[in-house]
Amino acid sequence: MSTDLGTTPGGHHPHEPDGPSLASKLNWLRAGVLGANDGIVSTAGLVVGVAGATNDKGAILVAGLAGLVAGALSMGGGEYVSVSTQSDTEKAAIELEKWELEHMPEDELAELRALYMGKGLSASLAGQVAHELTEHDALAAHAEVELGIDPTERTNPYHAAWSSMAAFTAGALLPLMAILLPPPSWRLLATVFAVTAALVGTGILSAHLGGAPKRAAVIRNVVVGLLAMAITFTVGRLFSDAM
Image 1 (cartoon, rainbow, N blue to C red):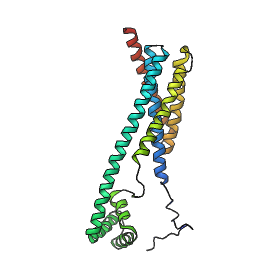
Image 2 (cartoon, helix red, strand yellow):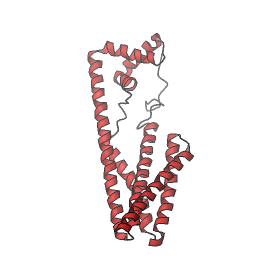
Image 3 (cartoon, rainbow, N blue to C red):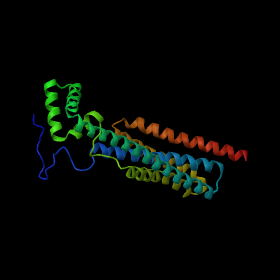
Image 4 (tube, helix red, strand yellow):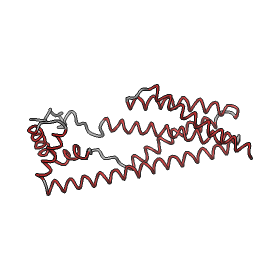
């Protein structure tokens, strides 16, 4: 059975483009949208809560900037740790697979054959596929089928951290500007309007990227954001009245 479907003039298979796959790019974009959404909701809740306690523009600005910086660092640090841990785990699994392929090639071939039989191929076809893939790139074949890892697509923890920080910051700037730029009497209304519009946008985009129903995603997004602002504003107003 030949698995060669032809190559481009550059020698690449047409179904194997250079760089990250479309699925990988969509995952990055989806993570960016969610990071921006988190920045919008958390910062909006913070500044609205402070605005419920005081009309002091300086206090709102300090609180908003502190929340933006803390949230961005938390997002970036968390993403760095998470991706680094995942990368270390994948690297260890690949190193173990390399050792097994070097010292137990026959056992690994039999294992790959059994895995393809488990996917529904007949014994003869599974054996042929396992043999040809092993001849082509044994490590890639085992990493994909046995470990669910593509050795050519490894996420950089630094890229992940900076991307998360940037997405959160972009989202956080919107409610911060919305509550600081208008006159005091329009602050809350302008913030609610701007945040609602932004959450509608991120809800639509995240649903589109995930192939989910847009209406439910938008409603869920907006309700959570408005609820967060309502609760923090109430808490701020209660503390203001108690002082």
